[in-house]
Length: 359
Image 1: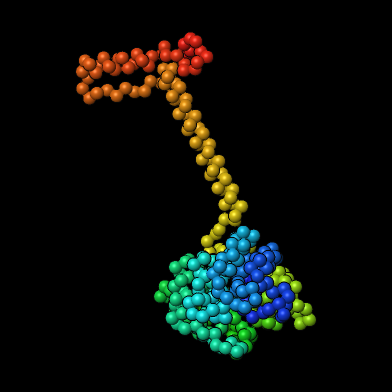
Image 2: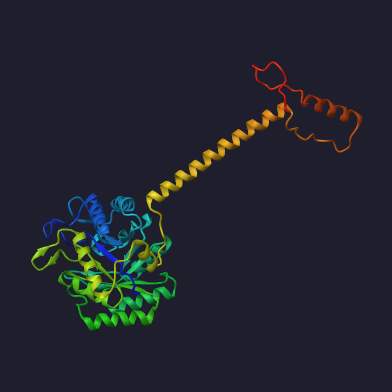
């Protein structure tokens, strides 16, 4: 049986705006709604950048926190992946949201040229981001813009800076970086399998090459990424009406390669991520625990009341504590105590005028 395909949806990114496509989600509410629609369409993992109200990029932990809360509420089990990309902040500001504890976060292990700038990732910053992910139990997705980044990720894994198994995303089609080339793509896959046989991988193409990388990844047994961050069109003539529409397009490609979209449970197993309970399951469990606690309290209180009542009627005689050495006076005291707890004691209810028969 073929491996299910984890479909990642990159919902916003740092570059596309509503001028490029009105469907690009900007506010946190729009992002949560778009993620939920993509989740329903078949995406198991969401990659997110957050924006300010004016649409500019930011690494604001408060916005990431609201997004995380919304996704966990409306998309039970979906894998959340925060971007630590360089367009959203400078230096350690890029990792300020990692303490929120998403499932995953992006980690570029080297620098690369972008269309108009250098995407700078100094060794010190890469080590710090990796350490923060390790500290907060976050699985990194290695963003491989060229071959050296794969080797660097493997080297970091060997010295314990990244936990195994690796998950690598091969990014192709960024201007001034690695172009879309089938032979290079296959070489990436072979190299990763040679260096880290237990690693998983995803292919990501930019613009018109998004669908090309989806198909190559499905064919070679990997996972795929789609979404408005990388591509705002369904085809040359048509703007994508939503992230969910791009997810459905990727889902449709799966059948051509005898693959199917992975469920969130399968995606977590494939990426060696812990399972999570849905909010409804957690609520039901809390409710059952509360009911059990209340029931136990009730029966314990009932048992105490019954024991006291029985003791008063002589049904249960509490054991007399005998002195270590029985003297005459102590025996007389014990006998007087026993007579006080005899079966002739009356039931302590005012309406009863005579001793209660115990027969």
